[in-house]
Each structure stands twice: as C-alpha cells, then as structure tokens.
Length: 448
Image (cartoon, rainbow, N blue to C red):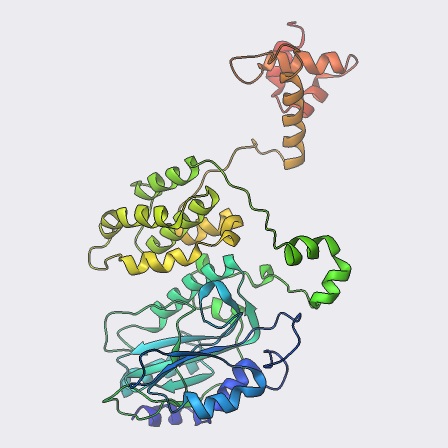
C-alpha cells in the first residue's frame, strides 16, 4: 500500500486542514478576512466545488476567519472540489488575478508501491539528491500529489508567472519518469492548476474514498533549493525577485500622491505600442530552421507571439487565428506530441497589457531563441547616447534639412563637425567622443 511506503520513510498522516493552515499561514494575517478593511492588498485562496445534482459549480473565497467553516461545511462533502496553493485577487482563480504562490503542487499518476519507493529513496538520499523532497504527499486515489511549501510566498508578477510555468514543467519531467510511474505519458500542468482538495472526495472507483495527506518534511522550500533540480537555463534567479512594498494604500497615497492619482484614482496605465513589423517578424522567426521554434519551447513561442501582439496593439482574435495557423508547423517539430488549440488557449492568458514590458532576456530564456540587439559596437550606453546626440545635431545643422539626405551623415562630416566645435581639439579626443576609429579620424582630419 502507498501509505505503508510513505510511513516507512517517516511520513505522518495529518489533518488536511492543518496543511492548509501551514500553506496559507492561517492566523498570521497573511490572507484577508471577510470584512477586513481594504488597502492592505491581501489576496485569498479560491476553492471551486460542484455536486452531482447541481447544474453549475461554486467559487468560494477562502477568508482567513471563515476558512475552517467553509472547508468543513461546504468543501469536504462536495462531490467534486479543487483548490491550489496560490492566492488571488477577486473571486475566481484565473491566471491574471494570481497574487502569490504559497505552495507548488505536482501530480504524478500511475504510482505503485515500487515506484513511490524509488522516488523517496532518491529524494531522501542526500548523496543521490535526485528529486526535491516534498513537504506533504497526498494520496488522491489514482496517484499522488506532491506539495512543496515555500518559506516565503513567491509574488506572481507577469514575467515570473511564465518563468515559473516552465520551471514547473521542467521539474515535472524530472520527477515523472519510468522509475516513478507506470504511465509513460507525462502530464505537465501550469502553476494555476487546481487539485482535489485535501480531505475531500476522490474519484469514483478510486481505492480511497477521501484524499489522505502525509507530512514527510517539516522544512519549507525556496526557489534556490528547487533550482538544484532543473537545468541551469531554467533556473530562477532568486535575487532578482521583486521586493514588495510594505506600505498600505493610505501610506502609498501620502508618500506617492502622483502615482496614487494616476494609478488608483484615474486607473491610468502608460503602455507604449510599436509597429506591426515586430509581430510579423516573430512569426517568421518561429518558422526558421535555425534559431527558430523547437520542441519543448513551442508554448512559449506562442506566448511571445501574444506578448508581441499586445505590443503592436492587435486584437486577441487576430493573434489567436495566427497562432492556430502555426499549429501544423509546430506539430512538425514533434508529431508524437501534438500542439493543440488548448495550448494556444493557455498561451492567450498572457493577453494582458501588463505583459507589454516583458523583458527580452526572459523571452530568449523561455523560447530558446536568440534575439539580436541593436549594436552599440561595445560602447557603454552613456557613450553611445552621446554619439547619437552628436549625430542628431549634425544631421540638423543644415537649415534646409538633412546634411546627408541619402541617410546617416558621412564619417567625413562627423569629423568636420567635431573639429569646427573643438578648434584646439586633438585626434584622440575626436576618436573618443565620436566613436570613430583612429584610422577614420586620421583619414579625414585634414581632408576638409
């Protein structure tokens, strides 16, 4: 029996409600109470349940002061009930409303006594150190759920959500293999995926009536620990995680009145758009044989298409259709693992203006596509901008228009301009300030 395997490694069966109290820090004021005053930017876990005799299900906000009451009176007795380890703003667990990840949860199906023993042996053996050791293991009826509780909840800013999604995919592939499951097909799930509630009803015909949960590790995890089990390019730099402000809304209003007026009162967001060329270029980039889309990165290539579509001011429907048109090409990268419209639907969750400023480095990391930057020839930004302004001034020196109407100013004119402004200047100074090579400066120094 699976529970015997867990107990042989020191696992202890615990009250499911205690697990949720641990994950969401019930009693510490971490999540919002039902009638708590607004302004503290607190969020809450969201549960969803449905009974067989009902036409529709119910979303329940799990307030701190009502958590146990809702759990015992509504959730555990429902025919179907799910929840995850994330807090949300609002009343539904959608990706755009996600606030903090308190626990990362994995689902592994097809688990046997032998495969579960294989997992624990590799997770507990510090010299082997092959799998991350979970805090809790839930027996869901046909598989197991692994709960990794963070010592500090991870703030889910847009760029981090997407990195965590690939991070979780990579960890799933690591933990779900021929040694840990008899199911060969790995089912990768995003960070927003809910799971059958602990202590709630299992599926019909399952070996268990209720989901049981065992504590196997009392030490909470962090990103640094989980990084050990993914490839270097997938690792998340914990030092670069955004640090949240501890100010209340009233304190922020007093300290940053202009921000408060624009963002809170007026609801203004200043995002810039670019020409459609960027979006069309990315479609062609995906299709390239070299430095194009690759299996394992298809989802993130479409995700980037959505982000670039937002940058170019395109509609969600247009982006969706362009993504669907790419399915045959993406399937050609691995016919055994088809790319589907469901994958596109998931990627379209990024259709949010907040992704407008998604970092280029993160796009490269997620898509595994190298993107050429505008070259500064090795110069630092300040020096590069100084040269650019100098060039701009030179171009506008002629009152009738551009000095060089065919394009950028010639190198001869750049040297000429610099000498006229620095009559006692030296060649070496001209070279440094204009960015021209020494050979070029010498060539045009006396050729006026």
